[in-house]
Length: 181
Ligand SMILES: C[S@@+](CC[C@H](N)C(=O)[O-])C[C@H]1O[C@@H](n2cnc3c(N)ncnc32)[C@H](O)[C@@H]1O
Image 1 (tube, rainbow, N blue to C red):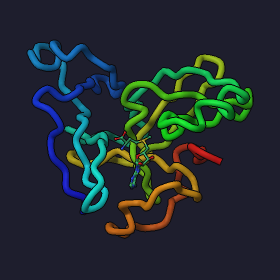
Image 2 (cartoon, protein in one colour):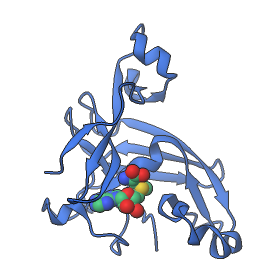
Image 3 (cartoon, helix red, strand yellow):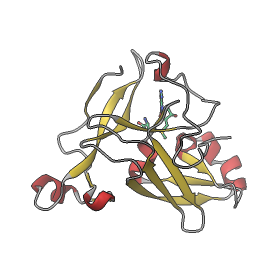
């Protein structure tokens, strides 16, 4: 199991009231007046040397809960090939199969790590430049929220340290969409 710790005293918070998560101003979550935070960003230890961030459930999330609506920035194919591909942003883009370019994912949507047995599915709306992330199965409090990036990973997966079951493609809420080709 990857070790995890809070990355900051005031984590990013979202509300899952009515089964729909909304990004909230930090002050609202902190005061706790009218919202129940559902997700938190924490540090994840990938290997002995490598640390990154991941998104975790602060409460149980029923199957098909819409947990995040991430907006994106469209990157035309040529611009991606000539510039973005050579930068760190390469790790945060989703394929736009219809338009041919990529979408740079913003907000919490950019922080979901990869799993071979992910608990989130997602749908890319290329016209509205939005990616919607849904619970693919019931998610327990404390679980990391993960998506499936595709078969060809560009990094050694922490799951090699933490073996998991193969992808549940038949039972998927939506067909899996690859983060990269
Ligand atoms: C979309 S970002 C996910 C958020 C990232 N953890 C961060 O802190 O910015 C993708 C990057 O996260 C890392 N990553 C995602 N899933 C991983 C996994 N299962 N094992 C190791 N590293 C992972 C890789 O470096 C990858 O390029």
